[in-house]
Image 1 (cartoon, one colour):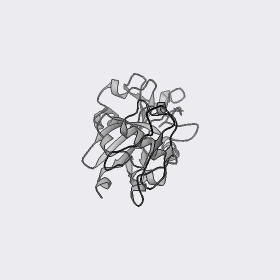
Image 2 (image 1 turned 180 degrees about the vertical axis):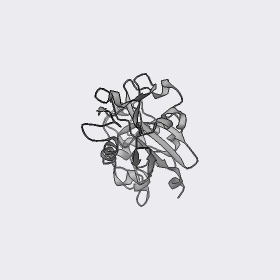
Image 3 (image 1 turned 60 degrees about the horizontal axis):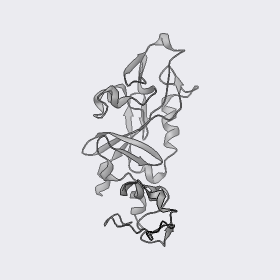
Image 4 (image 1 turned 135 degrees about the horizontal axis):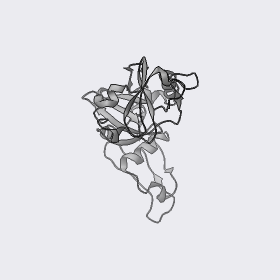
Length: 223
């Protein structure tokens, strides 16, 4: 598979174990033909990247761990760094990726507390899942009560500030999750996608999940 030409070599057509050739390495056995069925070219490339293969030496070993730039279009779903993301907002210089669903780490009010650990702690914990090469393409973001290379989108970002999230339908993931906004009240997105306030009076009963986000620096792809 060549990033420049888009070429990929896959063994024979008899459903035998497949050999994929990459520049700078010998044949790589990636198993049976059926394991590649249904994947797009970019998804196959990403799987090879995640497995530690690249198309050459030098800086490409770093950039190959970045999201595929052509996939960073508004509303697109992509697989990167072992997770599924949705591209929630794109500018000339940045692409904001929000986890497609939640992490399954539910926490209680206020401000999205997770057994004594706040949303910011969960952002830092999630960041530790990335490699150094993967974080090299990310920008630090301040999002109300969270900040860093991993952040929790704010109430405003979920309410159209991120252009993808302009309706309940686009916000909902089947369970509630916290935003990064806490201003005397906490704010979450409900199971049906509505943005809701949690006042101090609900402190003991309100529970929601964690949905992190990252910002990809598009300017680095041109260097």
